[in-house]
Picture 1 (cartoon, rainbow, N blue to C red):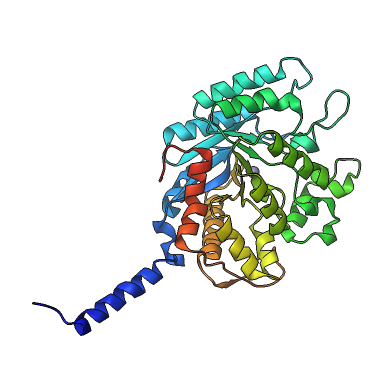
Picture 2 (picture 1 turned 180 degrees about the horizontal axis):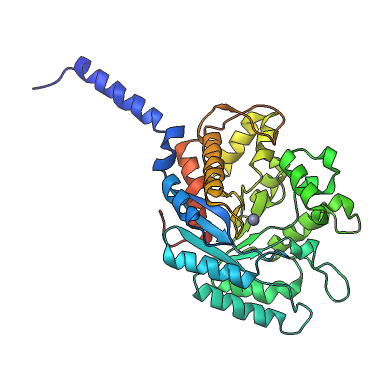
Length: 361
Ligand SMILES: [Zn+2]
């Protein structure tokens, strides 16, 4: 028996409405969707890290970093490798290297040996930190920048292994300004706690422009390298400047780590520009938080803050709610990005750029 068009229409309309709704997530989809925090510091073996990941449907990319006075890089590597072995679907990690011995003839050779062992032990890539360009000086007292040809054998080895580099090079532009001129409060609070990294107080150190120039030159010198610029590639203050580099360097991507507030700030003057930036560069942006667990972390507090950070960011990207936070001087609107874009930023781009094997956690 043939059904009349009049009878089919209501069903067609229901189907249509459902498919429109499915173009976007809602806040409540949060725990249903697999997500990756692609910038996490695992500096202690705390059960709460696994618990909150399970509850919130997250997995981690743990980043080893050579920070003076903090847990050493061999211990970090051992912790992250053990986490990866215990929970391969929940944790991957990036290894790093030390600048110790830079002036000796075999620095590159020794560094390659270390990285080789770390790759065999599960590391998916390498982190370079801001000590390169901002802290470390060679025996003649010169700052060593990332585009220094003496890094080349190490970079070539990383590329031959098919591994990417995450580079935290330079700092936010605010770092070169006095505290009262900084644009967001979290930079203000970080640099009041870390005057040693507040470059406004150290005019004898290299400039912001020198840091960005060295990173750009590094990308020019290694066009085949997969390179993820941590913290929006230190171009957090302008999506236009960032877009110039994304257009110029096809193997360059960025993580959002600790810099989402800078985009919220820019959206106060041009909301649509920020939204279109995410849509245009949807394959090149990775979600990450810089959350850290260490020996002093309290399990309940760690869990609560981590959940709150993740869920608040989720809401910012999936809804168009009016939101506020302590870093941004005024209410801003959520970006309500299409579901396909959210999937890439919160998951698929980390899998692709870091070559993660496990896929969905
Ligand atoms: Zn970090």
